[in-house]
Length: 310
Image (cartoon, rainbow, N blue to C red; front, side, top):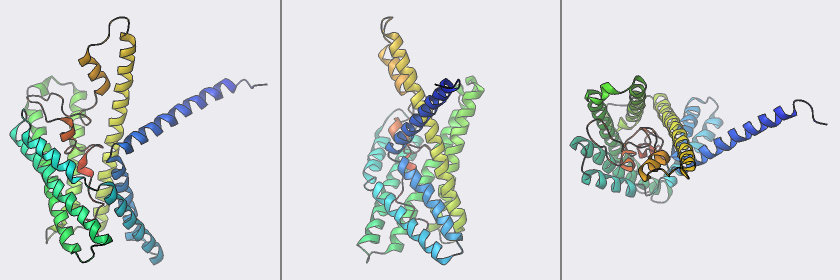
């Protein structure tokens, strides 16, 4: 005989199951995005290195140091041959019309320099595995050099776009919520660029930051990317659900127009698709802007395993 609270228990169980299923779907979608797994590796690597750096027990330090090397190898393999995608993004950025010159040039240079950085990262992996006669120091220097310049181009592009948006006429017509969302997104992106630049500019002879600061910067940058990616996934799932409801309600009373269906199914936040109309111009396609944006789908995060921090 069921107790009086049995229906309530079943209801709680259903809600818990729905939450778990939704969470698993979000994690699966995040990992399938390509750079989602890299972000997880990035944060984990920073934590492991931080533990190894401050571990007092020598045995424990060796264990975590070896573990960090395994994570680096995993990142290298996961990001292998990414330079082909980055080079294709650079070509598209340089040849696409309809955007400000500074945006095309900076975004194109960001992708082009990143492709060089990723080539050096792949060579670093070859040096670690079988081409041990290669100079690890020279490869790491080239990796840091191209990575830092790529981040600098992305940061300049972000700052100039923010300045143009704030100075536009449409900025005054935006609601306070829209302004806050835009500024928050830009602030997170700029912060991530600065944190990563703090790590990768160590090729400059007079610059030698503390390792603790480097690892904390990597952890914070990766955590911010995961946070933005989670918001992006939630917005995408909400838009998809809303689009499905609209399509279902539109059958019989007249289907939605094709353009409306696209917006309902693919509409998202500024981070997810920055090809939307801006104040006075149209930004480059979303796939190319993902290479610069501080988002979870951003190739800005894809490096070759964090070799920059030895």
